[in-house]
Amino acid sequence: MLILIAVLFTVFLIIGMPVAFALGLASIPVFVVSGAMPPTVVIQKMVTATQSFPLLAVPFFIFAGNLMNVTGITYRLVKFARLLTGWMAGGLAQVSIVLSFMMGGISGSAVADASMEARLLGPSMIKQGYSKAMTAAVLAFGSVITATIPPSIGLILFGFVNEVSIGRLFLAGVVPGIFLTIVLMITTWLVARKNGYKPDLPTVPSGKELVSSFSESVWALAFPVILIVGFRFGIFTATEAGAFLVFYALGVGLFIYRELDFKKFREAVTSSISDLGMVMLLIIMAAVLGYAMTIERAPQQITEFVTTLTENPTMILMLVIAVLVVSGMFLEGAANILLVTPIVMPVLISAGYDPVHMGILIVTLINFGGLTPPVGVIMFTVCGILDVKTGAYSRASIPFFIAMGIFFILMAAVPSLTLILPNTLM
Figure 1 (cartoon, one colour):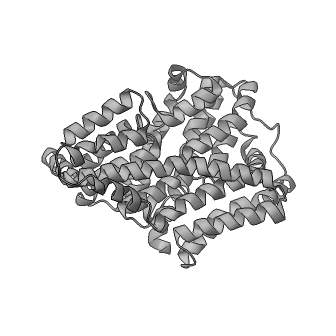
Figure 2: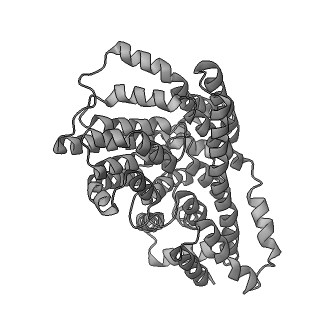
Figure 3: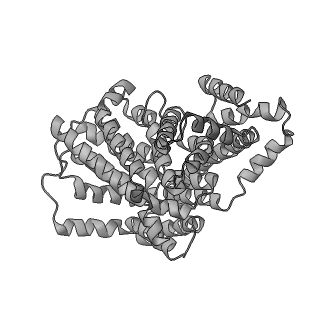
């Protein structure tokens, strides 16, 4: 039955069916053919999948992110990032990476960040002499930082579906996010020096300019700090933090920047409804397939199969990493988290790995899969906007693939990089 489910799901994807419907239809044999459970259970699982308090964090953070994007916060962050790094070799490319780090505290979505920066910075980078392929590579790889820094939508979904503390996951993502930013900035600097990409600013900005720009951006930069302090002192849960951020964004837009009007508010609401509809449909359908696979004992069977291959924890982790990278090439990040992680997490936990450590590694790996051919979602988003062929993008991405490989090795080998903040503050 598990083989039939896998075959059906693959066939549905090949013929171009949307992932959410492929998830739901692939589970039909378990409920109809095998008769393991009555079909009415499908409807019950669809409804109960949405009835989760931690899951409320998703619409709150999506709405807050869209509110911040229409209130001038993104523009101010670009200006601040440009002053911080625009004087380096590969100035605008460095700006894009730092902006992704800052946007991690706002959008929480790698695809959303990649799409926004491709439209915002892509044309300027190309105009300054960057090749289209290099521009696409930098913007795509930088977006992975956004999925690691809290409040990441991927981490919320991972915590929800695998019953892992979302607060601990948020704290665990901070240090890896900073480390990944540094790794990508060094890589960009090396590539820029080799290809002769010049700084965006002629000189290092003065302290006065930096202070002025920081004061304009402080309301956006303050939220991740508020988030960490809130978790540390038990002021709010992840869901309550999402609700707080909505009111925070409204307050900044209405009373501080005074750029939020009814038209922009309606735009944020419309975008949020569209984004949330996609995510919730994936959650509903993945819940049905997840239940079908639970009935067929998929996690137990896969755990048993992997342990027959090897009992070495390092080898088990390498097998799981390979599975996640491959699945990330074909599935959108949210679908991957909802579908694949409940299967591989029991394997990793039985091998002795910490679920929080694995959560950060897995969510980052899944988003990394979105950067790779043949159908990586982030890759296609950026290449589509900038009109870049995937072959050229792939060649330009080779230094970044190597850098990400080094990052993942260190992440897997040194759990303290991930666990230092949650173990210290919670």
